[in-house]
Length: 270
Image (cartoon, rainbow, N blue to C red; front, side):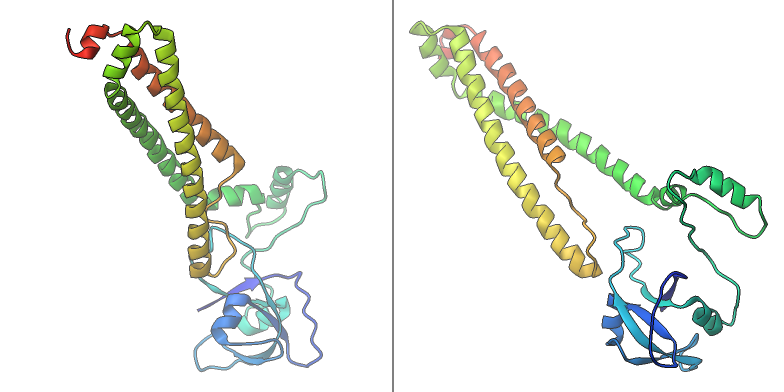
């Protein structure tokens, strides 16, 4: 099925007596059509109503709300579309561009009081209503992220405790030789920071690679230029700071637990 897109402002100029139409790039690829080809137009398969010339092939704007529907779009002159549908002076939706500084809410309210049979709404309101699904998905992802961070923090703390437990004898020897608790604590904390830094670098590289693979696959699958995965500097900064904070906290807790233990117990004699 070809989804007809209404654009009254589209100006297609053709030197032929047949009307001109514009095909979306994916529609043109599906129909194997090129600029200058003549197409039969019909509302029902096999019932040719009229013909038109392909005057242009365009790249659609990236819209997350329509990318999964995979509709095939064709753009007509408004009179040609009315003649094809047999419904003159009827439209489903049209847009009104406002002058800079005009209030969209006030304009919509004024238009709604002019006549019946239509409803005017600001574009921001329409976008908000059509993006409810994406908001639900975003909240779901946020919940998963919180659970993942909590679980990873607990896992990191267990790893650090096990790592420090392996250094019990080393810590006992340093304590017996007169090394201060502060020095041992600082050394273990520095090791935790280095491990967290290395993990942050590896995580950023994996995230960038995964995002590139995700974009490449879904852009080819949906035949769109929409960005499905975007790794911004803010995300990287937040992730690195979170990783360093968790690593520092887990390392500090594990090191504090070690340095407060009696050296004889650490040596296994207590």
